[in-house]
Image (cartoon, one colour):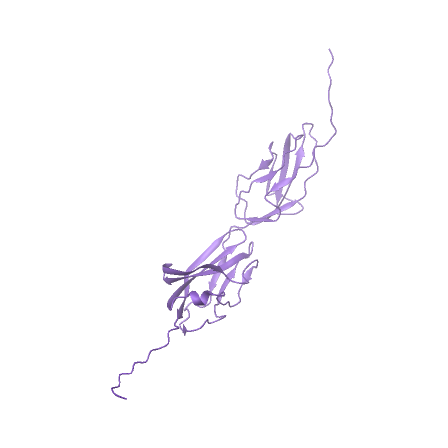
Length: 231
């Protein structure tokens, strides 16, 4: 009888990364890493590291399918990842290009620099008086917003739904005094208005401060009643 042995020296193709997308920002600490199947692959090798040169590994695996997910949470950090395929002969492809993902689980901060509130009554839009700061040192702010109700605790009538503050996006901190957005003043109740603030970062983490301050609006002129008899 005769037998034959097939020897291959051909390395398998390099996989194509799919997700998470390059430069992705997420709050999920167990991201599922996915790439396109390579038909010649018997298995794959994935490296995940906080070091772009992969000097040490935060996570590694050798799955037989084109996806891999850590069993333990990855701490808040920026990570780099790459994949290569391996065929049945034990030959590896080149590594893919390196993609990155930033994991951010920390909520943004809100600082109230007017803890006693605004005690004055206003008959016109007060302008840039709102000294409420927002910050996110992780993935940066996506937006800061305010909304308004006529009663405390988001009670009464909602006069303004969540409205983004101009200049508060894609920044580590937003500390400038800010005005109401165009059209907001006209929507406020003639009387007491309860403002709430909310900050959202690029990873989707959110923090809110309900009833962070009040604005007193009075646009009704005083009345004069003549009680004098005669002329």
